[in-house]
Image 1 (cartoon, helix red, strand yellow):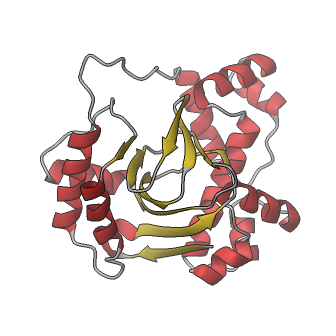
Image 2: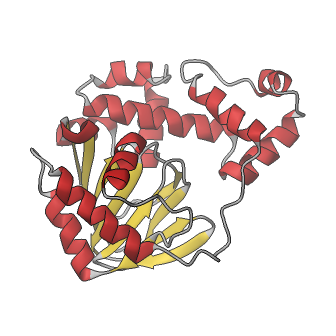
Length: 259
C-alpha cells in the first residue's frame, strides 16, 4: 500500500508513505531530491554501484538523477516514508541555513534521533515549516558528510549530458537510436555503451523512467490516468500500466486512489 500527496507550500513538496512493500523496485531515478526513512522491515538498497542493507530508522538521501534500486529481504515487507524536494528548494534551504551542498557524502545512516526528526517533518502535511526543514537538512548533511579527501564523483562527458537533456525534451516522441546517433555524431552501439556506463541504463530505459516520473507528478496534481499517461508520452495504456507498476510498485489506479 502506498499513499502520496502534494503540498503547495515550499515549492510543492511531495510526500510518500509506503506500507508493507514486498515489491522489488528496479534501477530508477527521480528528478527531485529524495529524503526518506525506513520505518520497519529490512531492504537492500543499491546506489552508486554499492549495496546497503537498510534497517528501521535508517535515513537516506538521494540526489536528482541518481540511479537506485530497492529489494525486499527474504520476501519480508518493508515500510518507508519519504519526501521529494525540488533542486531549487533544496538549494534555497541549504543556502538559507548557511551550508553548501557537498559532492561527497554517505547516502544512508541509521540514526534514531535523525529519523524521528524527519518523521516529525513528514507529519506536517498542511504547513511545513521552513526553519525546521533547514535545521533538519543541516543536521542531515553534517551526519552524512565524508572527509574532503574522499574520491570525487566521476565526471559525465558533455555529450552524454547533452543526450540526457535531449531525451528529457522528447517525452512525446518515439526514440529512434539511429537518428539519435546521427544527431550526436556517435556510433549507435558506442552511444548505448557510453550512455549505460555513465547513466546506468540504456537510453530507452532512461526515457521510460522520465515518462513514469512525469506521469507520477501529473497524477499527484489530480490529472486523470489516461490524460497523465498521454502527457507523459505513453500512447499504449497497457504499456503504461505495466511500466508504472514495475517502477513504483502500485498500479496507476491504486496510486490515484491513495492521493
